[in-house]
Amino acid sequence: MSADEETEEHSPLVGGCVVLVAIGAVLAGVFAASATAGVFAVWVVGALALVRAVTRRMSDSSAPPPSRGVAPESDEAARRRRVKARVAMDPNGVMCIVHAPPEGPPPD
Image 1 (cartoon, rainbow, N blue to C red):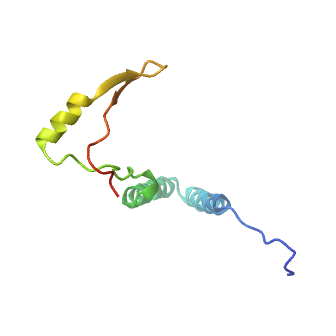
Image 2 (tube, rainbow, N blue to C red; image 1 turned 180 degrees about the vertical axis):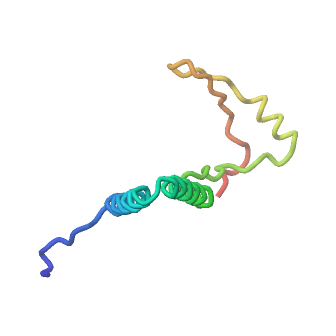
């Protein structure tokens, strides 16, 4: 291959479809041999899929973002911030609580 030719990139979706068709073919063969064995095989495949889905780690992209500010240093500081909070309504009618910026130097 020369440098000018582009390499083919395969989608992971294609691989998933191939695996799904292969599993379907195997299940069809099991059903052809015995209906009872086919039903059992469907239950086993379903249980394995459930175990895989439950034990899979969740990606970090769905994790909540890290906090941006520093927590109040005391109950008194929290009370003062709550007193300074005000309510604002956006154009869609959603109520928002707006807090005053914390006193002191900005966090690093």
